Amino acid sequence: MKNVCGLLCMSVVAMLAVGCEVPIVGGGDGGQNNGDASDGNTNDPGPDANSNGTTVDADSVAGTDASLAKFADPDSGFETTDVRDVDGEIMQFDTETNELVWQLDGSRIANWQVQGTSLLPNGGEFRVRFGTQDGERRAFFTEVSPPTICNLVVTNGSLSIFPTNVQVPQG
Image 1 (cartoon, rainbow, N blue to C red):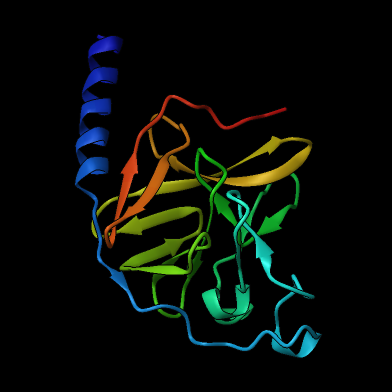
Image 2 (cartoon, one colour):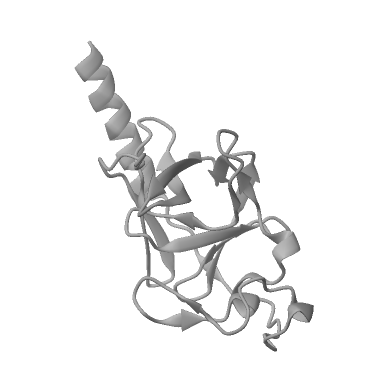
């Protein structure tokens, strides 16, 4: 029975994941990165590095830090606006515009709401979970059940979310 439920859950998640394609809306608010504290970017000076070696100016991608969802780990007190997928690619969630902000290229994906650690796109639900990787505390984009890290891909103007079997790292 447990295996049947697991297969059924995975099938539903896989259908949701493959069918969860959302059009990308226009890029950030054009915020300025002048390299000082006045622009609200706590990552200054300079642009932010991404997992593929490219750089994106965080101010022009996400707008202001005040509009980004901040996720807090109740077990450690760790807080972050950065959420990672299975490949370590970073996204943030703009609560003012209800958009997922893909840090790799600045794409903004419409219709994402955040409620605590729940991520709610167009009737779906995902969860932010905390773990430790490479000695650092991090937040991960996961399925609700099973609690595995998802793979997010932006291709041809659409976001696709794929399930994986990768557990949130705890060490």
